[in-house]
Amino acid sequence: MEEGGDIYLHLVKPLEVTEDSFVLSVPAEYVQNIVQERYLSRIGDIASKEVGRPVNIQFVVERSDVGEGQRSPIYDHTLVIPARRVERRFTSNLNAKYTFERFVVGTSNKIAYEAAMAVAENPNGRTFNPLFIYGGVGLGKTHLLQAIGNYVVQHHPNMKVLYVTSEMFMNDYIEAIQTQNSLSLREKYRTLDILLIDDVQSLQDKEGTQEEFFNTFNDLYNANKQIVLSSDSPPSRITSIPDRLRSRFQMGLVTYIRPPEFETRVAILRKKSEELEIKNMPDDVVFFIAETIRTNIRELEGALLRVASYASFSESEITLDLAKEVLKDVSEPPPVEKWEPVTISSIQKAVASFFKISVSDLKSEKRNKSIAWPRHIAMYLCRQLTNASLEDIGGSFGGRDHSTVLHAINKIEEKIQVDRDLSQTVNQLMEILRR
Image (cartoon, rainbow, N blue to C red; front, side):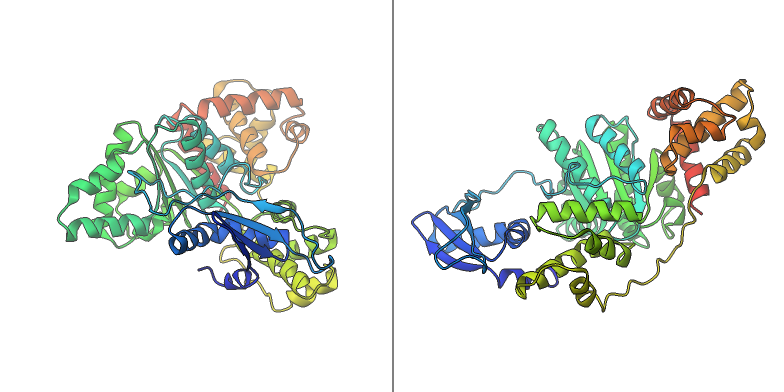
C-alpha cells in the first residue's frame, strides 16, 4: 500500500452487489481515477475470491452537491477477473499507465524522451544500445523505461520484454544460488529481446550480482538484444563497480534528465489534473504548486492531489488561499547538485575546447571538416540543451540562417544513431556541460 493511499480507499463505499457485478460509490471522478489506477486489480481479486467467480467492478460518482437519489452515470470498468488465476508463462512486470502519451516533454527531459522513443520504435539492439538514462529521484526515469516496454509489447507482441529493478535482479540471482538452479536464471534473462533495468547504481559492492549481470549484458548485447538502464548518477560517478561494467554502460547513449523547469512543471500539473478529472483548477494554484515543488515530479503530483482532496473533503472551492494553507508545511530541500543553466555561449566554449579550436572558428565561414563538424555538433547541442530557436542559434554562429542550422542538427541526429564514436563524443560533451 502506498503511503497515504488508505485515504482514498476509505472514500470507496459498497453500493450494490449483483450476480456478476460489484458497484462501488466514490465522491468524485478524480477519486475514482486514483482508485482505478492504484487499487482496481486488488479490489477485483478480493471480490472474485469472495464470490468464487468472475466479477465486473463498476463505479458510481455520488457528489454531495446533487440531490438525494441523483447520481452520475455508472462508470463500468468492465474488469473481468477470473475466479482462479491462470499463471502466465512470462510476465514483463510492466505497468500499463506508463506510456509515452502520458509523459510530459520539456527541455529538461527532451533528449531522454527522444532516445527512448527511438529505441521503442526500432527495438533491434542497434539503436543506442545500451540506452543509459540518469537523473534524480522522481524525474521520470522509470516512466520512460516502462514506456519503452509497453510500446514494444503493443507493437511487437512476440518480443520478450522484461522490466526489473537491480534489486529484483539481485534477488533472482540469490534465489538461483540457493536453489542451485542457475539455468532458470539464465533462461529468464538471456533469452530476452529487451531488458529494462532500473536503479543500476544499486549494483555497487555486490560482486557476485555484478559478475552475473556482466555476463547477462554481454550475451544480450552480442545477440543484438536491446538493453535500457537507469541510474541516479552517470556511469562515471557510480563507484564500487568494475571498470569493465562501467565501460559497457557507456557503450551506447548516456542521457540525463534534469529537474523540470517551471513551464514543464506547469504542464505536468495540468496534464495530471485532466487525467484525474480535477475540474476548475485555477492557474494561480497551478503556478503556486509549480513554484513550491521544483525538483521531484512525484511530489509535485502529490501536492496537486493533496490540494484537490482537501477541497473535496471540506466541500470547498480550490483557491490560492486554500492551496497555501494545505501546503504550508511543504518545504522542499535544496537539490543535492545545483546545475548551472546551459547556454549557447557555454556550449561553444566546451565544443571549442574539446576539439582544440577557437570559438571564433565556430562562428567563422570556414568549411573544412575540422571546423564544420564541431560546428554541427555545437548547433545540435544548442538545440537539445537550450530553449533557443533556430534563428537564435544561427545568429550566434556567425549569422547563419535557420535552414543551415536545421540541416546541421538533422545531420547529427541521423549520424548519431549509427556512429558510436559520435554518440560517445556527444555524451562526453553533455557530461562536461552539466558539471
